[in-house]
Image (cartoon, rainbow, N blue to C red):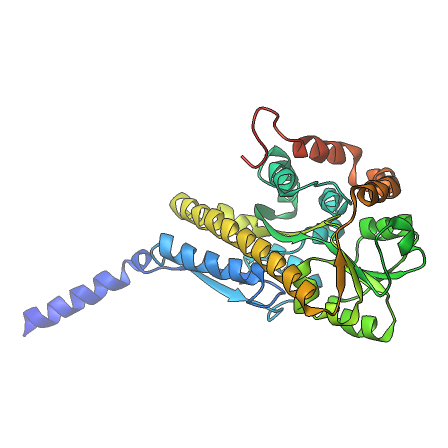
Amino acid sequence: MKKMIFGALFATAAMLSAPSAFAQTVIKFSHVTTPDTPKGRGAEKFKELAEKYTDGQVKVEIFPNSQLYKDKEEMEALQLGAVQMLAPSLAKFGPLGVREFEVFDLPYIFPNKDALRRVTEGEVGRQLFAKLEPKGIKGLAYWDNGFKIMTANSPITKPEDFHGLKMRIQSSKVLDSQFRALGALPQVMAFSEVYQAMQTGVVDGSENTPSNVYTQNHYEVQKHGLESNHGYIGYAVIVNKPFWDGLPEDLRVQLEKALAESTEYANSVAQRDNNDALEAMKKSGRIDIQKPTPEATAAFRKALEPVYTEMSRRIGQGTIDAVLNAAQPDTTQPEGK
């Protein structure tokens, strides 16, 4: 009997003295979109892979749809360590004093997805992330929402068609300058209010990715669209730097692997959703979406050149030049390689 009791006590003591074998690191991943968006599905993929590759040593808790924090609150929560991971839009870093990220809002700065990747996956993308570190934030990956189209209740096939139109924008000095350069009247408005504003004529149109236009039913209250691909909306997956630096190296390696794979997944989902949304809107008969002619695209580029001059003082000409140079193709390799 004594041997049985001693054996039980010894086993219990062994379990209590080795908590590291059962310790689990928790990552709270907060975001403001619904779970079925590319960002939401990317977060779920990261959770799946992070828990798999760390053999359960890491648990990822996802809080979508602003369950924990709203847009304006989540960055401070990350810096304070209340959450460990976010994926805010790139425009959200301006209020932190890191205005260089507003370069992503400049019209036509990325001629195609290959040019975008050369920036986000190259040295310029890493240099931009480095500017977040003094704020206690570490950038880990860039996730796509996609390239934008224009919509309105009147034809918008050339720059002069925008004169006098009230165009909804998200809060951005660059986007404000963009529409003023076209002679439009930019209106900052919460995304959730746009449908009703379009329906009642408070705004005449907007810009957004096809998937956002489709899932929010904006195409039901807009008669015309332009497949301009003039601008980009993307996210940065970021983490609390002290938390990340404090992780064991072996865990960080596995989490980086999980993030690389979930980034590829999230970006492929974004591309597929945008393609499907564009096709569905065209088939709906509710909105007439046109492709701009080469002449119209050249005219839009010319009309929007002043935005670069105006924003160079805010973003920094060095950052703009670095992005433009990085976006250029490698002439030794065919495009897309």
